[in-house]
Length: 205
Image (cartoon, rainbow, N blue to C red; front, side):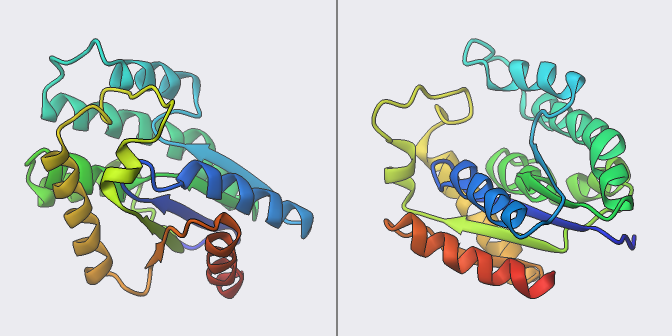
């Protein structure tokens, strides 16, 4: 798919700073006069936010891996159709906190679902949409999962072994698609990390 707009996604394990850096990037680009649409997964649509509530509620421990995957896919399908594709068609820059790579890393590598199955379903629900740039924020897993004062959701409460598999999955994805997926190590200095991200983004705009 070719659009006049640009699609940028942020990925990474828990506590890597995606929310912080997506917000900072949006502010930076808006100050430069860019038309920005920010979305998050799961969510950003009425249907997607309802699905988000189910997925992240720590009371829903009985959700199976395959159910989890299908719910993420359903939220993504609605988001792409309702918001992302129309925005890209109008020449806007869409910045998403997670996208298809997250399902491959979490439900594929983490949950053990066949990666080929996930990729096939993902291609269908996204209409073949691929990000122009994916910023993969990397961090220390123990530090990211144990941020003081943070109430953990159902995904964050999964065992460390699960999160290590997710991290490995992300590294595999980056190795397979180095032109699209750029690893940015989360630095203690937020400004330094953000500067690295801005340089990557400026190259594609």
